[in-house]
Image (cartoon, rainbow, N blue to C red; front, side, top):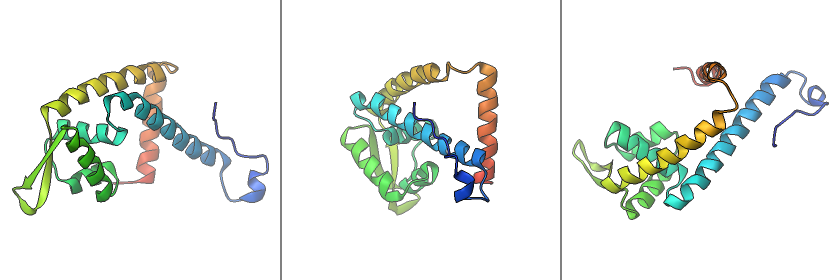
Length: 158
């Protein structure tokens, strides 16, 4: 298990810190990395990256959108989105066309093949999410989600 614990001399190194806050943040990041890695492994046989799955999901759930909007929603650079869209387009999962609202820009939309692979990957991921979350009761999951929301609000207040 790769839990992160601060060393005994933590306060000697950083006397103004809060050891619990540091451990909470570090373990949250570690957990997110572990989940992202596992999802990437699950999706490899479908020839879709985790980022590609997120793009397909956004396009399926919210309709066609520009790469800049995708970039904002995913909190990644436009160059990253362009690379993901290039990969998805080569596989026939998305189609790009001129943006009718801005002739200089493009709009990406999911194709029928993209919808099909998205359904497969969502089924695969959701099945694993159930297994991963099975270590917590429904009440614990609700509490966990609420706590995450509070931290998210503190990190990036709207």
